[in-house]
Length: 423
View 1: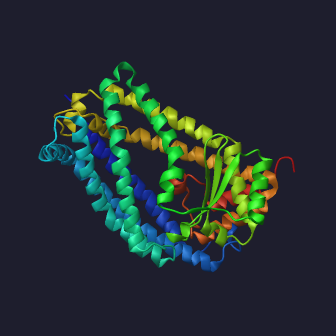
View 2: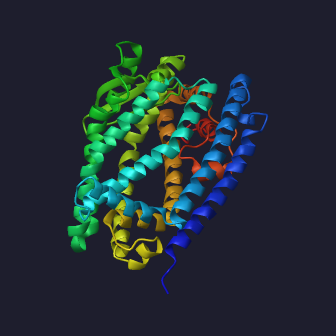
View 3: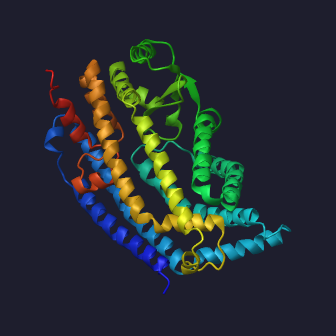
């Protein structure tokens, strides 16, 4: 008797929805708490706490609706075999266009186009409500409808330009890969990730935001001095106009080898009261680099990708797998999609493990900045970011352990307050 892959996948998806909804309810209860955690009393103003609480509750209510619609949609598409119906209809679309429907690449691209239209259509109402109702209600949204739809259209065009060559390459590799298929697929994705990391900040990101050099002044001098003291190969220091879309703030760095760049959101520069807070945040980010966190994460992701492709090669010719989901043929892309669904339990465990590692890295980066003498400034910067972004002040321990890649503010401040062993 064939294994019921589809029923098992749908069943697990529903179980995960129930489990995550339970965690969401716990976090929702934490949002409703009327008082700050003891350690944040006198640190976070009551006004900011009330605003944060209202914002968190609004997002929580919205998430309950969005999560329910998502699980119903996904489970329905799998259980009632909407994907194989889409696949057959896309074949007719290729024929209607006067092209060869037996060409798997063309057939796959038509299928993906249909899925993209469906996805955009179903997600659009939620994106609009999140942006123009929730974010606007709490003072974060700065987008106009024109800018929102312009970004969406740009994203679609980028998908149309970048997607087909990648899909075609994957199909050809799978068709001709032979016994070393997993290695070929991994090598292709590895090369692709390097290319995208190179061209994204140069060609793609500027399509959506304006990047300008940080003006000369004390802030620039302090960041450059810090980078130099750590032998960080800083080549460019930018400010990005994040305020054109949102008043949320952030900072990040990117680049390969000796060509590193740091980007500050203009909102971060505006919100922090002094340069030292911003420099402390940068010291934290440079801690990730100095402690090789980015390298370790990249290596881990490459190993996981290789293992994933190895698993795919074991099941890609499984007739039972395809038939369980309603397919009477075995297209390459469909095989990848179905395999992704069958390993959801493992993906959840891996995601949980990566979050644990990520939180550990955040504590280490905080500790690195502390050793450089930025403890007080980093503490002030973290509090400032928490306040200005109206992040949740009360967090449920189970929810944060499962979902958060960064420790809650309470835990980070407590770690900063621990005396160094050398003290």
